Length: 366
Image (cartoon, rainbow, N blue to C red):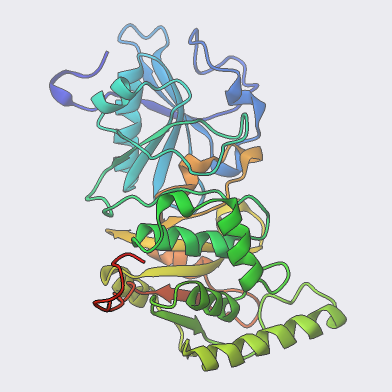
């Protein structure tokens, strides 16, 4: 039963061990999906609400989260669901976190609303069977970041840069939601790629070509070619040539390349001006492997920057619900966005589109 007068339900927090015997969940039935993926990389644990008679828990939730983030995710709640969810929210507050999410495998809109959650917009890209729920919910434990951008999961292993740019332009009102699809993703990637990834200058130039009215600034605090360390010398040579060509094109098209180190304070300031920051990060902290990856910084909350990550690791139980509206503490984002041995930071800032003047002979909206 939920605690009287709105007091948080007393709970016990224990690691989730799928084969534990005896089970800390007692007689509660748990969904099979709790055991079908290896969630160990995301600190799975049980938040259980004990019964008043001491015979075992009356409610429990499986909770996970990406490392170095500021949220918790309820995979499922069983038993007295309102009590379980209430206990998870209290657990998140105790840890100083800013957000709780709830995957919509079994959660109904009515149950989520009663617990103070609001629905997340469904992804614009299809969710593969078993790779995530069709619905999800969020509850902010502080003032939220404002307008929710659409979520779009990249459909290739290499098009994250193009996706973050497209989502930024939809969120900023430059591109209609219905234009964000796989054709748009691959078209922009093809213009920006350094084969197969998108490096900062090439991505900034491609954004300027696609949307000439959008102010674009590339931030890159090194003058050497980037994201090439894992290639052989021969493979590096021609990709480096393409990056030098991108710098020439940036100069020709008026895309500034700022060689200074972009600070987290500057990222926050840009977001405060309603700009979007495409930020290059390593996935080592959040996912356990050191791969460069683009995310979109679009909102701020106390102590954290809110990002869109176009990729989720389904094999670890990580879904679009994790990747969407993802709060990352400032120190964590600062650490994960310093890449390679020479510790460079790469970003592309996209400002609000300038309104083009329309002549009296030109139909508006054309």
